[in-house]
Length: 379
Image 1 (spheres, one colour):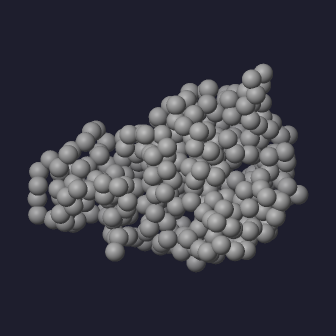
Image 2 (cartoon, helix red, strand yellow):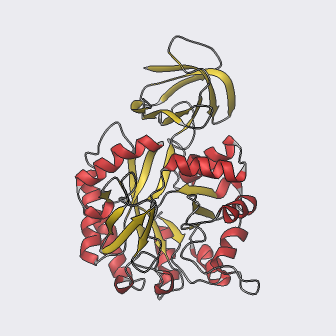
Image 3 (cartoon, helix red, strand yellow):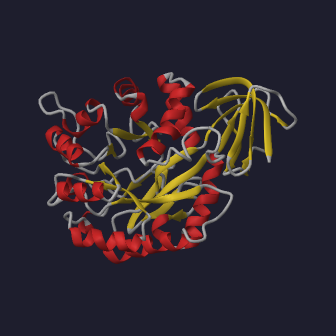
């Protein structure tokens, strides 16, 4: 059993200014007493970050379709405070997507232990709009064909948890309803949907927006578009990439003021160049040039980020003056609620997984525990 003491604990029901947390794989006790253990005076304890939109890091990508890539991603993400994640695919040939899904399903039978937990698959593409394809290969986009989707579901062996769809494409609304009936989270993204079409998608069963503001119909005062629906529809969740590149600081401030605290979700949407030097990289079949940490296709389109989760956390906090409790919601609790895993993830509470991030007064990572295992410690 591990005992951390003399630290400020942000737990599910409040805050303990100077307390102790004890755990093995799950949290055993949280108290306001000082006990023998690791003295973390001046530090805080918060739940581990959950990244529901992550393609890759440090040379590895989900679409590599190897268990080595998945294990390496898991081991690397803990350094940025991410204790669990959804492996996110990209638009590719049906054959390549199925291979990636099958690899994830097989990996889940014996995943890497002691590092970030792979919670399932986020399928991003190929059921997207060509008008907002972004860094998804336009020639491989498909209508929302149910036969294709069922082949994907079979290949994933129950690991399909989250799917991004442009609702206005042929068959879109029917597919959303079908996936909703399967208990899969559906997110509106890479879409030219109007406000009305976006609301129809929510009524059909979608309940999230993928990388808010990016790759979606923008706001106009006579047609507020998908962006308007994201901000106005209070029951929907919305992702946001807080690198200051995908979304400006002012847009992030707008998002913070208009989107409900219990519906914001921070994501990285990072690709394999994260934690590596500038240069040439691949995103599925597309060539990406990374310069000054900014990933772009040859035509200048942004191609994912190189954002580390903790940096996005710090950026959002600095640019919006968000309270730490709001940051916990956006980095962990809301994602757990969206995916209906709040019984084990998303907050510090007795009997929940001991996924814990220890930060200093500057909100820098000191230690990271994944299900009670010390996965990372700052040198």
